Amino acid sequence: MKYRSYTVSNFREIPQIRKRLSEKERFDIEVVAQVFPFKTNNYVVEKLINWDDPLKDPIFRLTFPQKGMLKEEDYNEIAFLLKENAPKDVIKQKVNEIRMKLNPHPAGQKHNIPQINGVKLHGAQHKYKETILFFPKQGQTCHAYCSFCFRWPQFVGVDQLKFAMKEVQVLIDYIKAHPEITDLLFTGGDPLIMKTKILRQYIQPILEADIPHLKTIRFGSKALAFWPYRFTKDDDADDLIKLFREIKEAGYHLAYMAHFNHYQELETEEVKEAVDRILSTGAVIRTQSPVLRHINDSPQVWAKMWKKQVEMNMVPYYMFMARDTGAQHYFGVPLVKAWEIFREAYKSVSGIGRTVKGPSMSATPGKVRILGISEISGDKVMVLDFLQGRNPDWVGKPFFAKYNPEAIWLDELEPYEGDRFFYEDELDQMLELEEVYNR
Image (cartoon, rainbow, N blue to C red):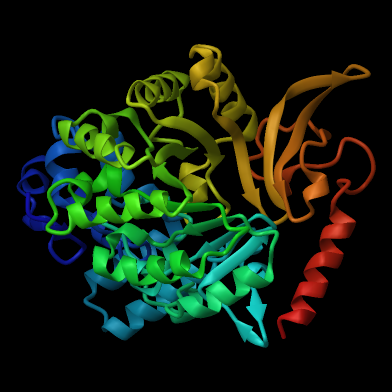
């Protein structure tokens, strides 16, 4: 299959769109796509979506903008401007006003930018001591965009919202100077959108640098779900598989961090073939997804997805919460409900599938997990802990919040005792120091 992308400019050419969606439903997509990035492709359209009832199909909701993703007042303003054929610069100004209200940099990302010798690595983030994230400049797009994506600012053409870096030598120097770093995560966008010859220009210098404390190279990618031909039929697919083998032969643990949001993404012959090719290199595929209203907010979906992943020799890794950015009001699930979904799904799979952790919030202080609901002196409480923290000493320490069945994010929770959670004073000091350091 030859790759063909669809965006707001040409999605009406899709035969199924013309046949299955009303003019009003097509217009809704156009309105929301002014604010949120929209791109899908012919594999997603032809292989993954059930067009018998597209508005209820989880993959349609995952890739095509939905009206509810915009608050009503914002939707109405953009719709009015489009209907009035307003000048493009007027629409753009209003769109950017809306975007800036949507918390484009969640989890304190701007505090995570490292620097060395006075040079800031604007295309990297170093939040947890063991792991550095690297955003290669040519990998800041995807084969298709997830409608919930917390990195939506990467794709909307606002430069100050982007993370991207081309110079790999500065990254190598930084890793060498930080022996605590064991893991390098290539992320984006999607680093596997790049041609293999470009990706190799990043990987080869790292392998040649032979950094003794760097043990793992990871790729965070949605390509398996949205364009599995990247590993099988693309003209440089064989070279990509060869590059994966070279990473393994150089002595690294190679981890493919696969984003699967629904079991429908696992059911094609194309994805099965792609998974087998990746695994043949010695790489390990770990799977992750947020729990998302309208897409996968049921234990049956998660249990079926985890079972299928194990059957395909992948390792279930994380259930995340939808981040506090973009259309969280549309996709977000309350923490208590997410824990109930997790628990029901978790107890229905075998021990082999219980490698998964969550539900986890990637928040400013770290990855905070809801462990469950309990009681203290007759009071119902939420039990939480850190899976990762800006201070590693926070990891694994249970702490308690007042029971709140409506809360969908950490900042909506209150400590069970006292005015602040145990980590908050130290976190304030850390962020203040980082702000001074990064000036």
